[in-house]
Amino acid sequence: MAPVPGQARRGIAKTTYRMCGGLAIMPGHDMAMLKRMSAKGWHVRGINRALLYRFEQGEPHDYDYAVDFQRDFSEEARELYGLGGWEPVVLGSGWQIVRAEAGTTPLYTDDDAEAETLRESRKGLGVRALLCAVAAALLFVLQARLSAQGNEPASWACLAACVALASGFVLSLFPFVGYTRSLCKIHAEQEADPRR
Image (tube, rainbow, N blue to C red; front, side):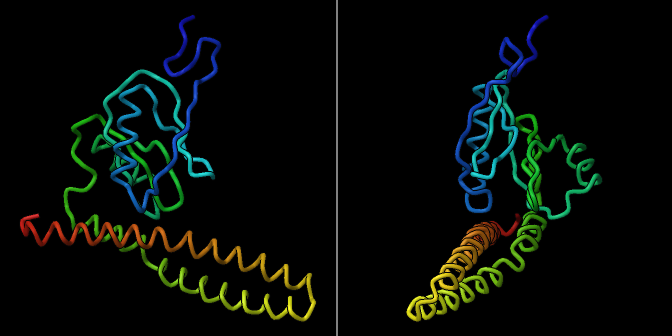
């Protein structure tokens, strides 16, 4: 029996990993990297919790990749993507990586629709980042006071909560900045060419 494309001779898929540059921060960079990997025969199959793309080996193919930031990726949305020649390959919470044959009409041919999707994704992230930063700062001050009073268990608990809130700050701020950057780029392109 001939091996299935993308699998090693013993039936185990060959896998490799690459770092995700940040879908909200550098989507163009990541999609170009996914295209180059597919041309070499490595096709994206997922992203793990360490933000590493997981690739499985297959036949080289010329795909275009795109990321979309729809919060609700319904069955209807899948059908619309399919009609346009796009298939979802990695689905996340509030984002999807899709691919199509090279040269397929882009996901967004209208800058306003793309900007609206980005605005919806960005909504609330700035406020969430600010709240996490303020709460982390307050907990850090409380932790210092508790430590000075010799209350080590409470001090360590405050420090752990502070680290968790600082993580929430970073995980909210980076996408907020990325979405804002993308919106500014769309706005600048529209100003440069009003026909867009």
